Image (cartoon, rainbow, N blue to C red):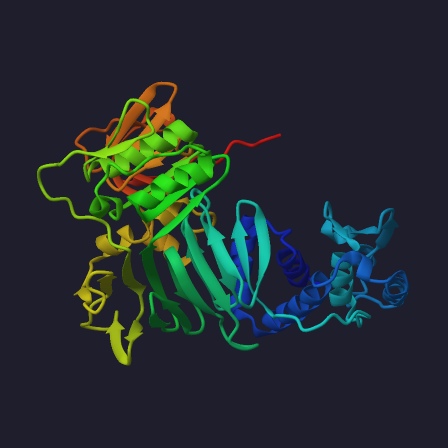
Length: 478
């Protein structure tokens, strides 16, 4: 077996490191024969993953192993043939030597053996959905089948790849994947969040906010679908409150933390006003603090018991959040957006490369032509994603680098400030403030210049680069 085919197998079962995966995926996108082999392995993996290992009968497994023992690998090199040695071990587990440290359940090992030796499989599960992509994050790689919803959480950007392109997801994003045929790129439905779609070798289609977007071959597109959404983990390790009405957030406190917040003292018009904030490892009191701070711009206060919300009229007008907002930016190449039969071209010569919609003016499109600096701001969060700084997207982020340290646990991101609740007490860093007052790795100081739902961006004192600092990861629990 040649090294490329061996890498393909390791990549498909998630045993290839991110450093090895990136150049391999570039080769895969340009190699039709390798794509054919990938499709063959995907079909096999889909079959064997559809049934538990006990459904591969002992008789069928024995026949497969016996057949494999009499089939020679493609190479006559004895050293290479030794890599295919298969040793049975107890508890229905076998070890494939060439996978080194990987020990797989018997059903997964059958998939690899079948792919190596080109043998048949004696299992016939029912109708199976095709595997259409792979998704990478800090936990490794997993396969995506037709109709799957791929979600990312705060501080955990994910990369979804297919042979002719990729989709990078920011924290608090969700994309549904659909197969379009055995030899064409999948299509995508963006349900919320920030994504960057790259169509390396074939056009790509996606739907977002009731609009159809067509991305041309060799193009790159940024989508920011800021849609009402809430997700709070039971232990507070993840807090995502995005464009949710104040009255509903008060109800979330009881559901997530068993803390009753009474909002009867807040006018109905204010209770229906929407707020956003994101947190990492927040207890009940930190959640209440974050919620009240997000709602205070609309006049919401809380009493000394920290259970009753009330209202104080504020001078000046504050623009409330709407239910949703959608920004689409063409970073490279050209695309088109279709809505109710009307087609809007973007990114071509002399055409705008940015369009924005919002809930209050759903039929009105704000069209603009953005320069490179403004386009880069659409995806600066991607500097914190694993593998995101390679390829064409990495070129766009050459003045942004990920931080060596994440934001401390207990951090909260608002629309205009970053709040840290740590041992040193509560500290608030205002967006666009004049001072370089945020401590960064290496004794450097930063000024807050951008907030996203997965981290914050700082200008570095005395340097020309920006630094993306992701949310702190949840504490590991034994």
